[in-house]
Image: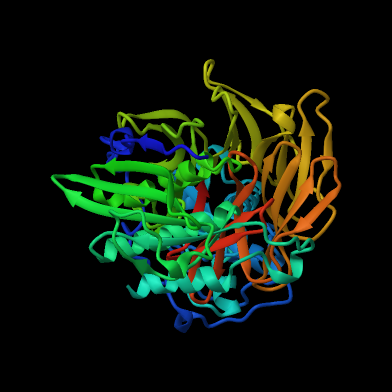
Amino acid sequence: MTKTIVTIISLTLALLFSGCTQQRAPIPEGGQVADGQVSLDNGGVTGGVDGNGKYTGNDGVSRSGFKMLYFGYNSYQLDNGQVQRVMGDLPRIAALAKRSKIRIEGNCDEFGTDEFNYALGLKRAKAVKALLVSNGIPAAKIAVVSYGESNPTCRGSKPACHAKNRRAEINKGR
Amino acid sequence: MRVWLLVIMTVSLFGGFDAKLTIEKKADQRARVAVVDGSLPTEASRKIHAIFVADLKISGHFLADETYLSGEYGGNMVDPALRSQAYVIKYQYTQENGTNTLLVKVLRAANSKQIVEGRYAVSNPAKYPFLVHKAVSEINAQLKFAPIDWINRYVVFARYTGRKQSEILLADYTFHYVKTIIHGGLNLFPHWGDPAQKSLYYTAYVEGRPTLYRLDLRTGKRTVMTSSTGMIVCSDVKPDGEKLLLTMAPDGQSDIYEYDIATAKATRLTTFSGIDVNGVYADNGKAMVFVSNRLGYPNVFKRDFTSGTVTQVVFHGKNNNSVDAFGDTVVYSAREGRGVFNLYTAHTDGSSGRPLTSSGVNQFPRFSPDGNTILYIKRSYDGNAVGYLGLKTNQSLLFPLGDRKIQSLDW
């Protein structure tokens, strides 16, 4: 390497990405409906956590006023207590289904990788859908969607707060 | 300045892999190098110095002196105090008439002989880190070291900004350059659409329906690829760009599909009743690895495209929920107790690799295009950091990212 090497380069990075800085924003969904039951810190958590990681409180309702349904770690099984919460709301859910579609939203805590969490949230929503269908709600009336960990109701660091985010919500669909 | 000092401290604190995990310790054969700022010292020129040091360090070929030095750019004389170095890199950064220019030369410390000179320019001042990356990758090449071209690439990532709100951003690998390119609503799972990084795929929710878009970064044109009830994620793009591995749930059941872009046809690859996600091409496209809870917990499996056979890849841990692949090597994140996620490598034939980290929350591992470096996200009480691990060089770097939660990333 005795010879001086001269390199003259002009980067074209600006050209490469020019014109790509904006897009039309997709339709935002968050924040459209204030959820009066939502607590975004530990202060709103009234329940604890059972041995499976499930929230033990009876608080929490969806935007449409139906009880939140809670799950254990990595679980998408509705236990008896949660089934009873659904059954308590079933008459009102059935009435809603006659005049509107129903949307079940599955949610997760912040642990784990998001792609797995989105699938886990979907399984939770699907478990609730199966329960509703088995109780006479037409499957065609129910849509399921997962928000993974993007839609927490509690942002604190306590285990009960994380547990409160492992949930499914029943809402009026579009 | 405080932020930059933190970067330097972080680089210093986390330099090298977790010490306990560095099995082989060879005599240090890296070339010692000092970096001299020949500019009128400014905040930008000082940051450039630190980026030089980081680039040289992660290359694995240079032992860079982290001390900030300033001096004249014009002359080729090397300060006698730097004679113990193998090389001295001098640079001068100027911003004039809308052009941001970095002049660089490399001197052999022993005899002040100039052996490399370069001029790099960009119109957007925010992109100055790329000037340094380009300079260092070319110095590295001129000195006949193994290529480190990956430092010139963009990282694309999504981060949460609120409830059901996230944005997609571009960054250089050190995250000194960061630019939001998609915002409003939920924008998730960005993945480069081609090796040249001219396009990307991402997921957005349109009237509640997860929809996969392709964004052409040259034109800004957005194209709907497909959509699915429940969820849709572009987990990987075949190197030829013609097929995608998607996680979709058309009937509420998440499975992995291979999507042919030319025919717009999706072929279902997994049928397990539980969770199958995160499909990644492996074994040079002859198979895919993916994450499934078919054993009752998230773990890494492989599906051979010819036989259709599914085999377990990882025989360690009870919660392995993220995987990437390069050839027959996989890197995965394993949850090991409350709040601890560590990275490991393994091989697609089921043989084990090696641990890469030993503490903290380490997630989203991604191979560099040459397979020699792994990018990952490290979370701690102090916030997020992007980390790099050189598999051959045993070098590592961390750059602070702030406290917003990273949703996913690709590079």
